[in-house]
Image 1 (cartoon, one colour):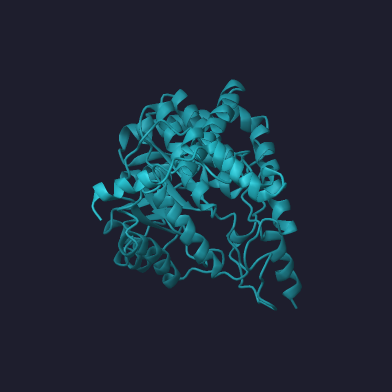
Image 2 (cartoon, one colour):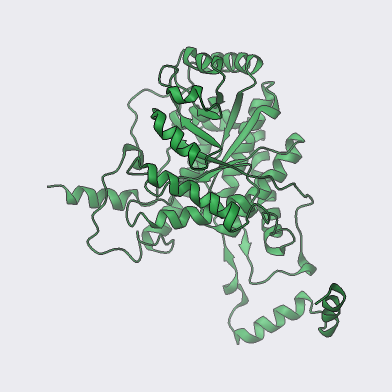
Length: 435
């Protein structure tokens, strides 16, 4: 069928405006309330039963679709053979979390595209040593403060050393950490608004915006997560005048020890959302991230992204969502709510003041508690965990990161703690299984 014939098909059907669609739906409901078809999200964005161009209000922006980079993440002390294995199986970058300068394996000198997160050393010596070796470093003083409740060495000292690092080493960037907020139970609007507030705080301290790297986490609310990434990219551009380089990974919030192969299905949806949402770099997590260090599961995690790129052709069709009334309007509403919260944060003194006053912690606690209540009641379903469980399932032995780690050190402020929805249930099962 040629384009001319295809276009003529539309002439066979009269246009139907939004009013007529609503009348038809209400007639089919036979007296039931139309509002029962409207589903609210945790962010207060109502999902309607249909979207129409008569009522359309989308973002006034169009962004390029990047060719996403495939990344893998390892523990703080990876073996040389682990790094080589991941690179051989498709990882274009390897992220290593929090090593000190004397823990970097020899393989790093062979494969230079290594990105090191939150390098340790309160005196900053280890950080400068790693930067001097030419590795990519991602430093996050505000992320450290948010997660631990303390600066590395103190606010002024941390800012001074960060300025020196950025001036001396082009391989150093500043992480804007939204992912930890998602893991702690923050809703989408909170994630974006607090992430933008972090960036605005750094910008106010005379840091170069082009060196910022936002890191986001995505969950299994597939279409809404795509809208979130689009809304964040739009707001970042409006605020800072340039497109962000988005690093995206799966959230830990919905990952489970129970029926752990379900985690692979969850990350599959999450990786699809990351690609469609326009992520520049994507880190997938293996299904057994909570309880094992398994090379084969890391390979499977990389293969999920390779499959999206090659077999599913997602890389070529990542912008296919453009023009969707639902996605564009949802992105617009998320952006408007995020902008409102961001303005409130700035008016109250900015990100650090929000942390010191405990406002940020309370707001995230409230959002997390609502989600936890929905999970506990079964309204929010995690398949294999609070519904469709495997009978008499023996849980694997968890790694420490599977549960909240209590810190005994004195903190400057109350940290924001990441917690999975299934933690309480799984802890009880593990306790009861002990002899």
